[in-house]
Amino acid sequence: MYLTGFADEAATDIDGQIRVTQKLGWKYIEARNVDGKNIYDLTEDEFKLVCTKLEKSNIKINCVASAIANWEKEVTDPFEITIKEVQRAIPRMQRLGTKLVRIMSYAILRDNKGMVLKKQMEKERFSRLNEICRMFIEAGITPVHENCMNYGGMGWTYTLKLLENVPGLRLVFDIGNPPLTDDFTKDYPYPKQSSWEFYSHIKEHIIYVHIKDSYFDKMTNKEKYTFPEKGQANLKKILKDLFKSGYNSGFSIEPHMAVVFHDESVHSGSKYRFNNYLEYGRRVTKLLKGIGYSLK
Image (cartoon, rainbow, N blue to C red):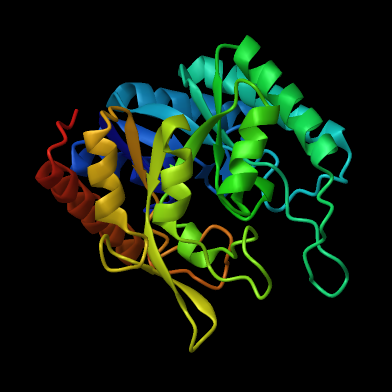
């Protein structure tokens, strides 16, 4: 079992991301953005410099948190956009020796009033995801789907249907996303999801875990992110159950307390970002050790 995290929440540049990872005593980063660009969108010179700095520090990228088919992408967009992203990502990941890539299943389709459509173009989604997975798997890379603001995150039944129709796709379970996400397995008006309920139905397919904690503030109608065990994600209960089930893979922290990738209104000073990520990582380490995990 190993620890890693979205270090771009600690620092924008690779130097800061490496530094906070070393301070935590960890060996891995889940790479999303470096200087505001996804790892596969860096120029060749920028990418070479990142590789050099990682090699010198003996820090590795365990997973690329790609934007492939994420909540910003529509299933009605030209598929060529997605294919080009995959084609850019594969050689970069092979150069880094990275075996996991986080993907999603495109944005939820809504009408012009914002209401969720009953027909979500499932056949097209499954067709695209099958091709994405084929490309990655043939390159020796495992695609993992995250439950987020996408088709597969609409509820646990959607995730299972996705797995049924896309052989080779595996799961990264984000523990903190359900309390912030409408549960489309229930009747309208949709309640928020339960992390425990979602986890209970898909746990046998999980090969990687994102750790965050959260709750939805009904007074302000906004999502809130907290330190571990301060939210409503049933974090410790799920981590304990994973331990009992023999889970021995990675845990990646994504605090979202100082920086939120999908919300530009949430931003903090560089020192606060760095220290918040560091404190979050230390708390998660302590929590996991208390449950019984042996950390690498």
